[in-house]
Each structure stands twice: as structure tokens, then as C-alpha cells.
Length: 107
Image (cartoon, rainbow, N blue to C red; front, side):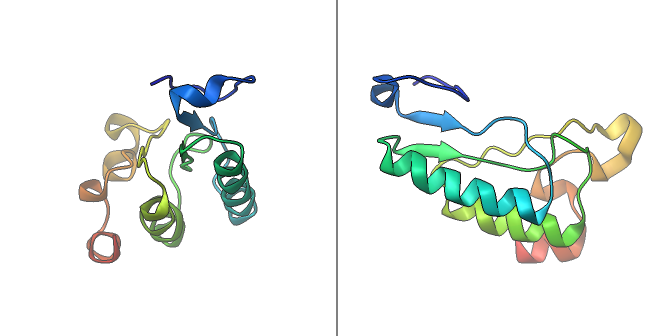
């Protein structure tokens, strides 16, 4: 499997496409859903997108709607973030266990 955010003809045999470091807003989320559907139509059986890298910490509703719920329909769940616990506390890491009780209950 190749982990890439760009590909050329024939790359589909390796199966995985990552949409890259993206913004963390609902407009971007909408574009990512379309992009993942198009990559499936283009022969990539596994594609994934996740917010947070650009902008560090996202809001709880964004976490629940995209990182948790939206990623549950993606074949690969790969949360990541530019944030860290040293500077942002528990809001830095993208894992469900590091989120608030409300976010954990809905994840």
C-alpha cells in the first residue's frame, strides 16, 4: 500500500489515497466528501480525509461531525493534528479519548 496525496495513472493498484493537509471548516468538509467519492469512482478503494492539521484545534461540533461521524464512513480512519498536548492541553491530540465527555459519548 502506498500512502500518497497525489497520483498518476496506475496508482490505483496500491489502493490508498489521502487528501492531504486540509482546512478545518464545513466548506472543506463538503469538498472532501466529493473528493473521496470521486477517488472511489477513479479506482481508489481506500481514501481518507481528516480535518485539524491546518489550524490545530477544532470545535467540538466539528470534531463530532467530521473526525468522528464523517470518518466512520471512510474505510481508513486516520486522525491527525498539528497540535500537541504540551502547548494545547487535551485539545491538541485528535484521538477520541483526548476529547471532552460530550465528544466521546457521540464518537
